[in-house]
Each structure stands twice: as structure tokens, then as C-alpha cells.
Length: 520
Image 1 (spheres, rainbow, N blue to C red):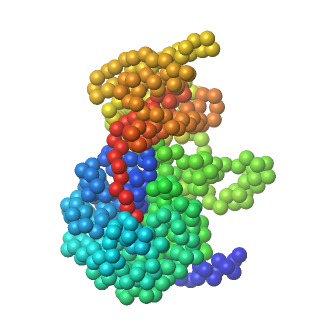
Image 2 (cartoon, one colour; image 1 turned 60 degrees about the vertical axis):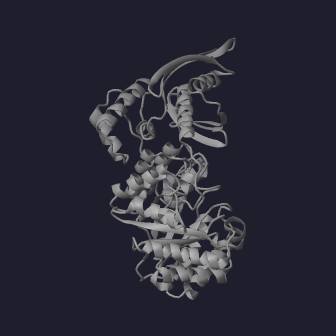
Image 3 (spheres, one colour; image 1 turned 180 degrees about the vertical axis):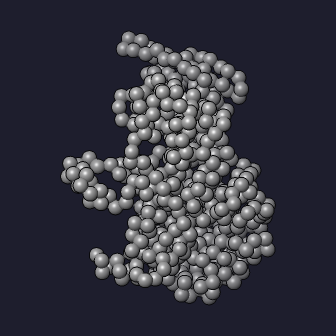
């Protein structure tokens, strides 16, 4: 093992810097049910800046007025990462990017066009020469406004390699500063990705003067492996998303990629600028904003990532954590200790713990959290870190058209379940009763009646945030209506109240849902 690691890592050489291009707010948001509004995208962008990503793809400026405003706001609000917008090769798309981002602190344009025979024939209905012309024209146009222009040949891994060499060579000549190779449908394998990247680096004139990047989807579960293979071949930027969210099976997972490079630095001899202690917080924040839960066995940030149940594992970890843990929970921002706070704790202690958890709140928001904390502390003996995170994140997603005010439920073995729900709908308080097959069904039926929704519930999932019978319940729901999908999460010690909050969050997200523009 040591011999292999030494050969790959080449000790004595300074580690190579890999830049992290985060597309959570663009490709990630295209994942069904993961739409975020402008305020939510800004909150997530600010966290990505704290995480230390090098580039944030803030959206698709030409796709909608809402996306344009999000790209503009994020670009002008952040002073650290480079902020880019995706654009097709049409000049109107490029101009939308420029208009949204000009005057920002650090910005660029990311333009793309399909390069595979399949896409060119059936989607674009263009000849290869026309694709090359459109790509060159787009890159040259973008370079009139910014020195940071990235080009992606969509579906690169199913493209003719010779044509890909020609296309990339032309866009580099036109002024592209970054060339990104997308595995758009997650089709390739690590060996193929390594060979393709090696060929491009060797055969494209001027390849040594641009940064080569990779964008891998996870349809075969190989996104991170393919990204690492591209890095080994010479790619120096990786496009990825928090929690690996994205179209279909998602993208390369940022936290998995970063921790692979960090944990196996002796093998790869690569480093990133990511503050890994912010990984778990970033994952939790995104989960709250989108309602998209992370499976328990998810690498790095899943609930079981640092859990040990087997006796032999527990024995080994107690003697030396390295026996079954290749990284510490603290290294990714998971606190190994429990926070003991209760009803006698004051505002200062709560505010201090919130800061220690990585959140920056104050004023009105702190007052809201403190009020909810006191209410929770009266119901629970101990308030844990996870409880506090849930309280903080309840306010992150912001209010929508429908706001929860209160409810009561009547249910039993010989009673028809009945719910009385009070909501605020567009500023007007409405109170109504309804029935259902059970208490949760009664609540959902009543909420739908008040909100005027005809959605269908497609997913209902309950988790306990902490252990014990007094644990807060965390409910995830997904609803669909007219081919649109909305997800929501809610937390409360009362599981039916948590269900109501989650259902309302999903309805509000459904209201904001728009059809995404397809990209790389």
C-alpha cells in the first residue's frame, strides 16, 4: 500500500490545486422538487462562499426573470468566489449573462452546445460545422465583456473524439479560458474518462494555456470516480453539487470528491480550497431549502456516515477511531459531542451555540429562534444541536403564499379523524375543518381545501431528529400537480404539526415551481 501511494502521490512535489466549481444553484436546482426562490438561492450562495468554493454557477440568466434576478443578486452580493451564469450559444443568452453580472466583483460566462452525433442530429438539428461556428461565435462574443469564459461541449463522452478535439481547439483559439468536458448522461467509465481527457490535453493546440474541467453525472453511480479519473489525467477543475443533487441521478457530490482528495492526499497529491468543516452544515442547509432528504448511508454527510452498530466495530472505534473511521466527524463539521441546553438556558447561551454551529443570525431572526427554543425546551428535557439546527433552518426557506398559524386534531379508534387548521393565505387568516382516513390525512385534506390545491401526495417520510420519545419529528413530503413537483420539510415535537408544516412548505414550493432550462 505504501509503495502504491508513494508512486501516485510523488512525495516531494507541492500538491496541485484543484478548483471547485459548484453548480448546486443551477444544475442542482434542476433536480425535480429542488427549485429555490431568489432569497433561498442567496442564502445558499452565501454558505457556498463560506464553504470556500472557487466558482458558483448562480443560474441560467436567460431562462426566466427570476433566474436573471438571482444571478444578478448573487453576483453583486458575493466578493469571494467567481460567479457565473450558464448560457446557450445564442448571443441573446450570452447578453443576458453579461447584463446580469456586469459590475460584479468577480464573474464570468459559461456557454455550451451539444457535440454528440445524437444531440446534433435530433436535438439541435445542426451539422457539425454549424455547431463549431456557433460555439466559436459565442465564445468570441463573451470575451468582448469578460476574461473568464468557459465552454462545454454537451454530451462530450458520447461525442466523436476527433470532432471533440477540433471543436475544443476552435473555442480555445476564440478565447475560451476554461474547457469543461461534461459526462452529461453519466455514461462513461473512469478508464474512458482518463483516456478522453489525456487525448484532449495532448492533441488540442494551446491546451496548456487553458484550464480543463469535468462535469460528471451519476446515472451509473460513477460521477465521483469519473471526476477523480479526469483529475488524474490533468483536469484542474471539477464541477459538482452539494449532496450530489442534479438532473436524474444527480451530479458528482462535492463533499465526496473533496474528502476523497483530502483523505487520500498522499495518493492524489491534490488539494482544494474547501473548508471541510462547513460540509455538513452546507448539506443540512440545502436539505432544508429544497426539502430533498439525504439518505442515511450517504457518504460523508449521511446520518450513518459515522455511526457504528456492530459490536466488533464499536469495540474497535472505542480503542482507536481509525480502525473504522478514515476521517473524523469533526473534519466535516459533525459535532461529536451533544449540547445540553434546556428551559433555563438564556439567549446568550443559545446565540453562542448557534454561532458555534456555523450560523450567523441576529435581531428579529434570533428572537424568533429563541421563542421557538423556549417552546421546545418546555416539551423536551434536553435540546440537542440537531434541534437547534432545525429551529434555525425553519426560518431559512422563508414564508410563501400559505403560512401555518395553528391546528388541532381529533382522532381515535371509534372517531372519524377530524382536523381544524388555521392558515394565513396571502395575508388573510382562514380557519376550516376537514376529515380524512387518519389525523395526518385530515390535516392534509384541510390544508388543500384552504389553499385551493388539487395536488397528490407522492411521498411521506418521518424521521426523529434525535433519540428519545421526546425527540422532534422531521417530516419530508413530496406533492405533485399538473406534472409539477414540490418537496417540503417540517419539524416539531408533534409529528402531526411537523407534517402540516412540511405539507405547506411543499405547496409553497409547488407554487414557485418553474420548468428548468436543460443544460450540461
